[in-house]
Length: 262
Image 1: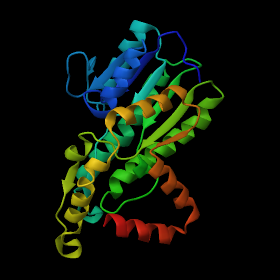
Image 2 (image 1 turned 90 degrees about the vertical axis):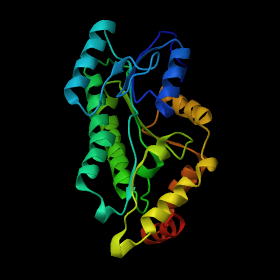
Image 3 (image 1 turned 45 degrees about the horizontal axis):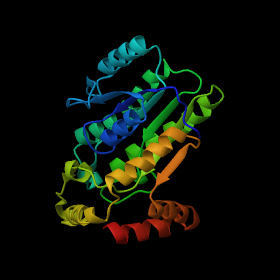
């Protein structure tokens, strides 16, 4: 899709690092106006210091943005965090935080922006390859991202006839601070022993094999700008695994995944 010469008003959450920071840079380089949201402000990166789980604060910022610019063209719900550990043993409060940030806050941000979006607008959820297939000891994170995908697909159908595009972008592993910042519960108790810790360590050890941030961000940016499809998977390996997921019997796919990641 050919990019319009008219500058866009773009709202992006989670812009002080990783994918969000790079997306903000790419949009600004293209001449668009970016309103970056983040809990911790950084000069030149964050236009609004805001905890996206604070629904009142988000409503105020989006309303002020729309009043200032007259519209919102694109929203990218990018803010999120990771959580690992034996699902049975995770503190319920941490489970709630994960769902609140990764799903409810993302959905709320998009809904607020839609109030000021015209035909031709674009709503993008930055999801994860983990939304496509479950992983042991990351079940809650996978579930939160799967919820994001289902919301995006539903909204894709609801808004298509109104000329607003909705997409979910599912990147695989990228070299950012996401892994380091993931909340980890390594306690396995009698049932799981050291398995949660071993699984987390195995995933962390693959950092050098992850996609480079700059390259991945350009691919994600391209998906966000085009937004012709309801789903984009970033990473050849993850596209292949997604095909396998639909071909192999569920039990076999889960057993193979468990051997790899457990």
